[in-house]
Amino acid sequence: MNFWVNQSMYNILLKIFCYLIFVLFITACNGFFEKDNTPEPAPLVYMTPEIQPVQGWSTRAGTGTGDDYLKMGFSVSDHAIFTTSIKGTVTSISQEKGLQNWQMNTDFPITTGPGIGDDLVVIGGRRGEILALQQNTGQIVWKTNLPSQAFAKPAIKNNIVVIKSIDGYLRALSTKDGHLIWSFQQIEPNLILRSASNPFISNQNLFVGFANGNLTKLNLSDGQPIWTQALAIPQGPFAIQRMIDIDADPILFEQHIYAATYQGKINSLDWTTGKIFWSHNISSYTGMIADNHAIYITDAKSHVWSFDVSSGLVNWRQDKLEARVITAPTIQDNYIVVGDAQGYLHWLNKRDGRIAARKYVGSMYTAPIVKNGVLYALTNSGHLTTYSLPSRSS
Image 1 (tube, rainbow, N blue to C red):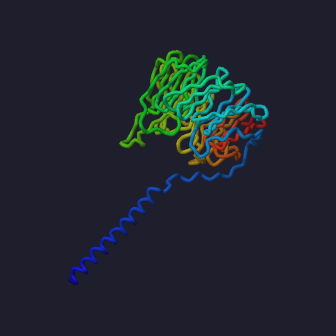
Image 2 (cartoon, rainbow, N blue to C red):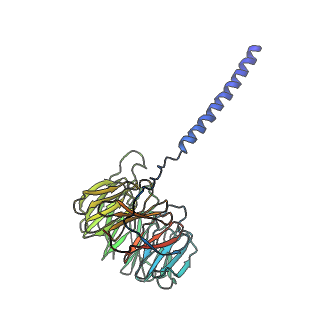
Image 3 (cartoon, rainbow, N blue to C red):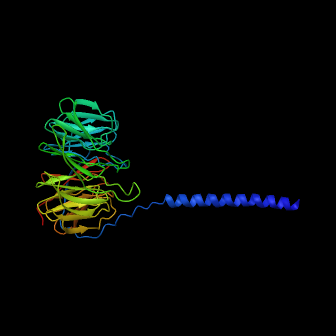
C-alpha cells in the first residue's frame, strides 16, 4: 500500500517535472526564434564635410507610408511634385515655394507611387482600384478596377497607362477612359519581396522586371514580347533562398539596360536584343543610377557600389553605411546621394565614394530625386524637403 502511494506520488511528481521542463523548453525556443537578428546600423562616422548642402523649403505632403516598408516613391514634373500616402491622399506641391497646389482624398488605401504623363497622375489601390487625375487640378478623369492590387508606379506614355499588379500581370489601359488595351502575364513565385520595380517606357518599348528574375521587353502598342532575359537562377532548397525578385528599377542608359536582382547579379544588357554584356554578383532590391562613367547601386547590405559602365569592373565600394537600410542612389552635381531609415541623407563623392556630407531629414525608404539641380527628399511620414549645392564642387 505504501509502495503504491509512493509510486503514485512519484508518477505525479514526474509528470509535473516533465511539464515544467516542457514549458521551459517552449519558452526558450520562443525566445530563440523571436530574437531579433537584424544587424545593428553602422554608426555615423566622423567626417569633415567637403560640401555644405543648403536646405530650401520643407512642407508636409500627405501622411506618407508610416512604418510600412513600401517603396511607393513620388514623381517630379517640370512644375510640380506629386506624392501619395498609404491612407489615400494624392498631393501636388509647387516646385518653386513648396506650396500645395491641390490634394485629393481617395476612398481607398493607395499602394503605388504616382505615375505621371500625358497630363495625368495615375495611382493604384489595394483592391485593384486605378484612378487617373488631371495634373493641374487633381480632378478625376476616370476610375476603373482591376482584378488584383497594383504593385508599382504606373508608366504613362503615348496614350497608354501600364499597370503592374501583384499577380504578375501587366495591363495597358487607355489614358482617355481607362479601358483595357492588352494584358501580359509572367508566372510569379509564391514568395516575393514586399515591393516591386517600376516598369518604364522608351519610345514604343516597355521594359519590365518581374519577381521571377526575368526582364522583359515588350511592344508598348500591343503588348507583344520582344525578348525575355533571365537575370538570375534560383538557388537553394528553401523558398526564401530562391527569391530573385527584380525590385530595383531597371534603367536605360546609352543603349544599355542595367538591371539587378535580389540574391543575384547586376547586369548590363543590349537594349535591342537582351544580350548580357557583363554581370557582377550582388544582391539589390533598391535601385541604381548611371552617368557617362559609372553605374551606382545600393545593395541589400546598404553598401554603395560604383561599376565601370563599359566593363563592369568595380571602381569603389562604400560600406560605412552598412545596415542603415539606405535608398536607391541619385546624382546631384558630382555626388551620389542616398537616404536611410535612420533619417539621414548622405552625399558621397562620385570619384571614390567617400562621404562628403550628411543632413538629418527623417526616416525614408524612397530614393531622393534631383530635378534641375535641386534634390527632393520625401520621408516616411510625408515630409518633403529640398536641398541644393551652393556651387559645383569636385
